[in-house]
Image 1 (spheres, one colour):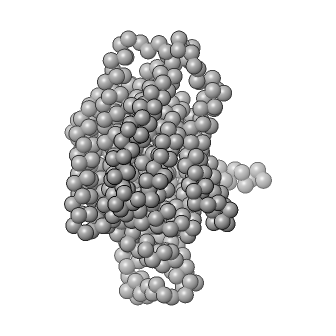
Image 2 (cartoon, helix red, strand yellow):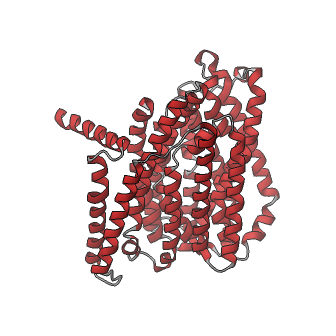
Image 3 (spheres, helix red, strand yellow):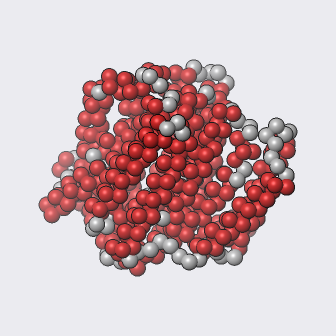
Length: 507
């Protein structure tokens, strides 16, 4: 975990700054400055851009971090690995763009009844998707080089800072909504452009076709893994985008705006854990290469413990004062509270199961993961369609997504355990659950003693939020760190304290 700890410390600090910016943008400025319909348009475009990116990557993204350890050779320019994948992605982006225009009429017909405004802006999906797919390619290549900091900074801090600036300009009425939307969409291409020029500067990118010299024994393996990864990850991203697309076609843009805002809030809590996953993925691939099951078990359990702490902490911090927080914003967002609950549970389970996806995808049994992913895809679609048709609206969609993710993660973890004996769970994790339940009981007791009144004075509501958050810190966060209930979290906190202490002494 040495490399993981060193890079994770840097990327996690950057990620937490990005977390604050993400909340400022999605949970504050978007809600205050935009209508639910406008939020729906922006978020549906970005979500659809993710689908475009997945369609156009043709399996190259996951091939990069799965097989780069085998190709890493500076004297041979890594066998032209990056250029080969770049050309494949370029071909995929052109192909998907042509398909987009070919089926534009069918896309318009799907949205015209419930979300007609989306049709006017749908073509922005193309630049967003192209920017995202090349960012994924470059980011995964840099992961293989153990250069994780710049991609994290660009995606989590730089892009979100630019978004904040654009939102403020729009709030000052210096921009029309159309110009605002254009700037938001174009800003999503900047991280990929910066990484492209960075790779050129450090001489990791060459346009010489002669540099492509993939050994013959790897060609068939690469093609097979690419095809499998393409289908498997396509199904995964369909699940991510399916909710917003189905809500847009069956309910409307305002519902998309509310639902995707809840998704953005819950996605923000994944930022710290994603920094660990970014750094861990090449380490996991190397452990498989070295047949080091003990190393895999160690990183699996440690990531699970950290994920559980982040998940429980996020659930407590975000959901326990949810009524108080939502009392300050548009009343329409009240219907997003049950969505937030179900999605937070799904995120908690996702993080608690740690690196199961990365371990599965880099193992020899990676093909079997397709069955789990197809179940996930079909399950979410069937439950979404059934619950929306039954009139449960976005609450039904939230329940469907949270429930299916819970089942999917535990089933996949169980398979990894049966196949390789790798288990992310530890008995000590029960202490974290017990402590979090105690905090929940304390907040519920507070409600009985001092019932919340949404019409109370602003100061009273702010004080109540502050009290709940301090209670969470004193009864959950600090005990975990001080009493070493989760060693990796405690060690991380001590390293930060040590670094700050050194700097303070120097001053």
